[in-house]
Image (cartoon, rainbow, N blue to C red):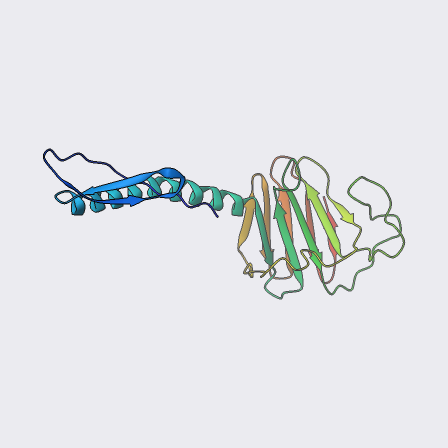
Length: 195
């Protein structure tokens, strides 16, 4: 943690120095008997004047960072999705379903490099759409966003967006679309669709 101390100096003609405060690094701070209260007020004013823009800057940066990574769950809690613009050059939409009754034909799933899924992956639970590319059924190795905090519910009819990527919560599932290409995936307990 970095601590920044701001000191304002003001000269008062004819004032007597009544107190000297020694600070680290051989620095000292002197107070005059006339300007002591004004000095404290100037110090506070200067601190506020510098801190306010810094807080605004860091507040804006935090809001922007939060927008680059969003996670949410469907109303039923059966589907979890992430919109991620932090870990890839372009935004990515990923969803994972917990309980499904559809089957996925062998050879359909692939890893993020386009290769086949390794043995032991749970095929048919993960879906991925990278900006500018076609969606695909992704290899599943673990729970999406394991240990990544809370999953706010995205109510039916609500949506989340990151750049051209938008995920919509529907009564029976979630649809994520790339507005730039029109590519999408739709997943529900009963079925999935890639387009």
